[in-house]
Image 1 (cartoon, rainbow, N blue to C red):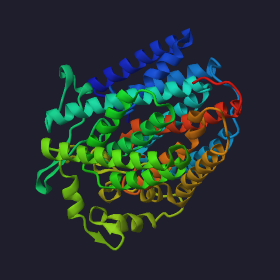
Image 2: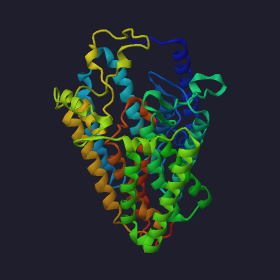
Image 3: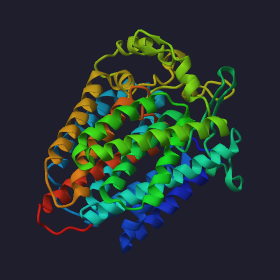
Image 4: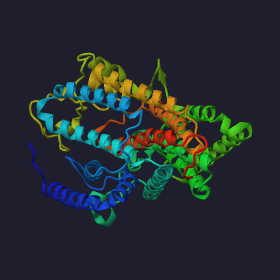
Length: 463
């Protein structure tokens, strides 16, 4: 069951060795620097095996050192308890659905759950380590550094085209291949998240996060504005149709929630600059790169009822899900690659080929298929709980415009995410890096309430 190749064994030993070193450094008091490093490198899973990634090992080690060492704020804050309750219900949904997957695939299920649990650990670690306004600023700067690194990765991919980059000839450091489908003339940028759809969503979320930081603080304009433009260029390069739609909807929500801070003149300027940057990004990507299929894909889109042409399989997924509507078919989607190797030879016995299906390209269908109504409702309750927390947090007034506006930014980010997940599922087992990014970002949003509660109007605060 746990057969390992030599390469996988070396990877596992290296990860364990580095994990021990990180634990020693964490106990020695360098846990915050290691946490910062983890956040910056989340999109880049340098060493991975069937049992997880090096990033997961770092997250567990830093998390354990923070909690065992009693680092950070011990006061949970008023909003952590209801969110934790909803996370517990989500965990129960996974526990109930666990045995619905075929037993021969038990290892795949366990490793998938470990990956999800690493995001939970990072969520609580982030929440515990952000307790002051300067730490909020620091986290936004970490997201900016991450954003720059992701853009740099994408620039190299654009230059390389459809040739895979393998630094120093080490396969573990190989870049993700860009998507090329000659039969339908599909050329799409994938980035470090291994998929155009999720990469596009990441850039949309970062557009709002970076725009907010620039609006609320006025800092680092020379860096943030080029990064915003780069995000728009890369988003066009993904060729993803859902992300621009989600971004437009998010833009109107952003303007509505921040209308008082912006005012009519700034709102007009904000929209004009956004349109000009988007137009320039489209011209550059369409004329000067190979990743120029976005508008062709829009033009070729056909809608059948309420379903776009690329989602024609949704009815079949729903039909299959209705076979086990309460608890679903198991915690993890079964793929053809789970059952057969590249040469078509069967890897697992006792599991029929009919059990394998591709991803439905919709989080909500994915949840219904894998976890049933129980899991779908548990995740829906978590989303409602987060909305309620952010709404209540937005009513708290402080002297810090930066801290006070974060809950409204959280509402924008969560809404854009929920809309965009109609066409992609972030819970794929290969997307642990994106799951961790979301967990840390949501934890930061919630942690801002601890600061706002202490910084009532008239109090001093760090800027």
